[in-house]
Image (cartoon, rainbow, N blue to C red; front, top):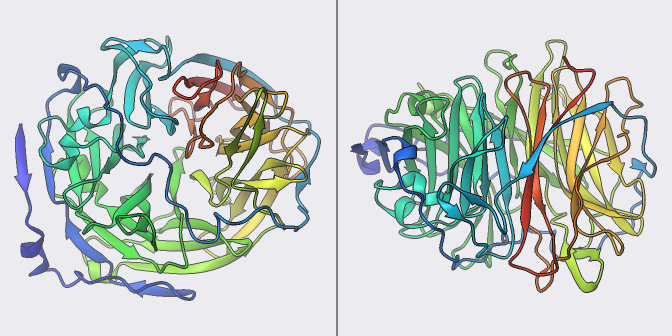
Amino acid sequence: MKRFWVPFVALCAVVSACATALAQTAPHATAGAAFRMAARFDRSGPLREVAPLTPRRPSRREEPARIPGGAAESGGTAADSALQSSPGLGAAVTAGFNFEGIGDGFSGPSGNFTVNNTVADTNGDVGLTQYVQWVNFSFAVFDKVTGAVQYGPGAGNTLWSGFGGPCETRNDGDPIVQYDQMAHRWVMTQLALGGGNYQCVAVSQTSDATGAYYRYAFGPFNNELNDYPKLTVWPDAYYVSFNMFNEARTTSLGSKVCAYDRAQMLAGLPAAEQCFQLSSSYAALLPADLEGATLPPAGTPNFFLNLGGGQLRLWKFAVNWSQPASTTLTGPIGIPVASFSRPCVACVPQPGTSQALATLGDRLMYRLAYRNFGTHQSLTVNHTVKAGGNTGIRWYEIRNPGGTPVVHQQGTYAPDSSYRWMGSMAMDKVGNIAVGYSISSRSVRPGIRFAARAPSDAPGTLGAETVIQAGTGSQTGNSWWGDYSSMSLDPSDDCTMWYTTHYQTADGLFNWHTRIASFKMQGCQ
C-alpha cells in the first residue's frame, strides 16, 4: 500500500486561490474558490481481501441538523396549483428484480447484520454487474442479476482500513455511493467527524466494487460540521454540497459547495478541491448528477439547486483546474414554481400507534438528475409538500438550465388520502420519469411505492402507483424516518431504474428493513 501526504500550507504558497469565497447575497458571479489539496490519499489493495468491520452504535445524532426556515413551519395556507388528486394514465411498467437489502435479519458473507441505529439513510447505485447499497453506517455489494451478496455487510470505514486518521477510525455515515458510468468506477463517500472533521472519498480502480480503491480525505473543516453531504458525477469534477454548522449543530453557517478533481482521482494522483462557502441565507443545495451516455455540451458548468422563498434557486459552478482563480460560482437564479405549502415537521400517521413520522419537507430530495437529450437539457428533482390533509410528492422537470432555466412541467402527486414523502426520481433515455417514495397512513403501514409517466402523458401528471414492498409494521419511539432514498439508472441500458429505501415489517424501532427493486418502462428499449 502506498500512501501520500500533501501539506496544505506548502500548496498555498504557490496557489493564489487559497482564499475564503465571498458569501452569496444576490445573483452574481463569485470568482476564485478556496483551493486546497486533499489532506491525505493512498492506493489500497482489493477490498475483497479486507475483512468487513462491524459497525458500532453511533455516538452522533443520526438526523441532519435543521436548516433555516424549515423546522418551525407547520404547513402554511398556500393552495397547491399543481395538485394531482387522482392517478393519470402513466407509463406501462415491467417489473425487474426485487430483493432484500441491509436491515433487520439481513446476512451476507461476513455474517448477520444487527440494526444498531434508529433510522436508515438508504442510498445505492447500480453498475454493469453489481448493485452497491450503503445504509447509514453499513454497506454491501450485490450481484445485480441474482441479488446474491458478494461482500458485506460491513461498516463504511472498512473502505479506509489502513488509511490512517479519522477516515479509518470513524464511521459517521451520511453516505453516498455513485457509479461513474463515464469511467466505469465506483465513488464512495462518508463523513469522518473527529480530528477537525473530514469528507472521506474512495474511487474504485476498476468497475468491480470489491476491488482496489484510490482513497482521499478532504478537510479538515476546522471543527465545523460538514453535515448532509451530497456527491454527484460530472465530466470535470465530482461535485459535493454540505450544510455547514458549528460543531454543536446550533448555528447554521450556510451551504458549502465543492468540486473534487475527478481526473486526478481516477488516476490515483494527488487531487485538489475547490470550494465556495455561501451565506447562512442558503442551505441544502443539491449538485446535478449526470445521467445517460450524452455528455453536457463542452464547458457546461455543474448546476446546483435549492428550495427557498417559495421557489427554486439555481447556481452554476464552473471549475477551472489549470487556473483556479478563474473558477466561478454564479447565482442564485430564481425559478418560479407553482404555489405550495411545506408540510409539518413530523405529521405522517401510522396504524396502531400515535407516533408520527418526520417529512424532511424543508429541502429538495436527492438526486438532482441531469440529462442531455441533444435538443434540450433537463433537470429533475422532488420535495415533500402539504397536500390538503396529507403530504404529497412535488416534482419538477426544469429545462434550459444553462441559460434561463424554466419549469417545463411540475406536479404534486397525492392521488388519495395516504401520505407520500422521502422521494427520489429519475428520467430514462426516452424521457420516461419515475418517482419512488415512502407511503403511510392511519390504515397503511409504512411501505415503498413508485409512480411513473411517459413523455406522451399530460404534463405534470404521474400514473397509478406500483407497490414495491408493503409495510407490515409501524415505527415506534422515534419520529425520524431517515434523510433520503435513491433512484438510479442502469448504465447497461439507460432504461432500467433501481430504487432503494426502507420499510417496516413489525412494530418497533431497531428493526427496519430495506428493499432494492428494479423496473423498466415498456416504451424504453
